[in-house]
Image 1 (cartoon, rainbow, N blue to C red):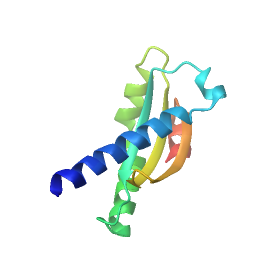
Image 2: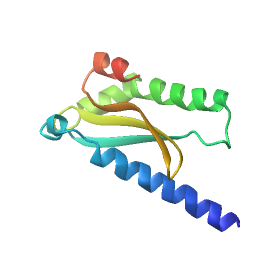
Image 3: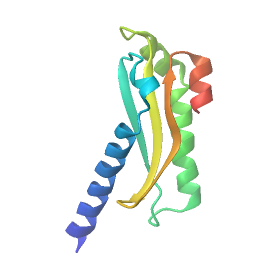
Length: 112
C-alpha cells in the first residue's frame, strides 16, 4: 500500500508540473529567460497549516535572498521565470503565484 501512495504523490507532482508548464501564458512565453522554475509545495492532509505557511515563507525568503538574486543576475539574460504551486494530489493543485519574471529585488519581493 505504501508503494501505491508514493506513486500517487509522484503522479500528483508530475501532474502539477505539467499543469504549471502548460499554463505559461503566451506573453511570458515570448520573453526569453535563463530558467523557468516551478516551485511546488505539499498542501495535502499530511501536513498542517503551520507547515504550509513554513514552506511558503521558505520560498519567499529564498527568492529574495541576496545570493539568489546575485545568481539570477549572473545568468546570460539576468532573469528567470518562476511560478509557485501547492498540490495535494493529482486532482488538487492551486497556482498560488502565476508565472512571473524575476530580475531584481523588486520583482523578487513582488513574487514573495
